[in-house]
Image 1: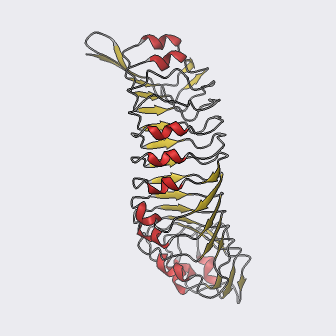
Image 2: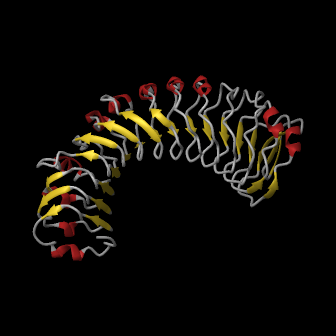
Image 3: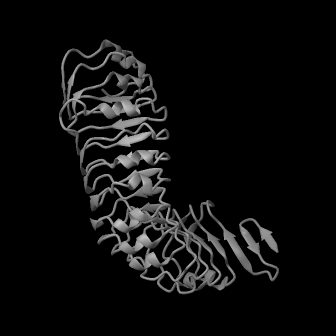
Amino acid sequence: MFQSIGVTCDNDERVTWLDLGNRLLQGTISPSIANLTSLRQLLLHHNSFTGEIPPGIGSLASLQVLHLNTNFLTGEIPRNVSAWSELIYLDLGINKLVGKIPDRLDTTKLRYLNLESNNLTGGIPPSLGNISSLETIGMGFNSLGETIPESLGRLERLSVLSMGGNSLTGIFPLSIYNISSIVYLSVPLNQLQGTLPAELGNVWPNLAELNIGENQFTGMIPASLANASNLERLTITDNGISGTLPSFEKLQKLWWLSISYNLLGTGEAGDHDFISSVSNLSSLQLVSLGFNNFGGSLPESVVNFTEVSSLRMKGNKITGRIPRGMSNLKKLECLELSNNQFSGSVPEEIGELGDLKRF
């Protein structure tokens, strides 16, 4: 076997591995790369390549890894990909690719599929549900429309599903809620509808991030979400979620809680009881509860948010006085309490918060 910088050959001097990522390269990808018939890994990511992906790449029968992320590639994803039976990793993200996602990716070994941040149109092929090996699907920030196929619910190994920033519509597939391996689910900035199932936290025990912000979800935040003990980020901003918030005291890894612009709360006393359940979470850094229907007074436990840098609660129906002890929030940079129904004066000790930039 021969190995040079970025190039590996087998004993017959055939190129099997070509890594030219992060080399400040420009120009187009040569069509002659299709002559490297023994190539297993092609890594050209983080360069400035332009032009189209050579169609001949689709005929590389030994290819296992194709990594072209972060270039300026244009044109469509090659359609003649019938030879990609060995492909495990496909990353075409952050380019300028157009057209539709191929209806058939004839590979049964694909684990990682990233097409994010392109200009792709059309729908998500239902045939993706046949690639049972898939663990990661990234299609965010394109111009994809139509609905998310129910067939994706057959992907029992799927851990990452990222489809935010498109024009997806319809009911979020119930079948996906049955995939117990989900760790990261991000579908914000679409027009998706649906409700979060009552058993969500039990079905997704390994969930680390849930982002359904800026959609049309309704219903309540399920109490079972408190059982997802690995949850770090929860974003449900700008939907039609109503009801009260469950206790999150078990979520010791939670650092981001963003549920603004919903219909949460009753406008009465007791709406902020959940604050006591999260006030001792040492990991919590952002709490965004603005523009809901929360009433009652702020509990004294709010002064325990000692690690929080952003506390946003404006646009509710909060009454009473701002609790004493806000000077404990030494790391606070953003405090939003306007458009509520507070009484009394603003505690002078808020002026002691040296890092506060927005109030």
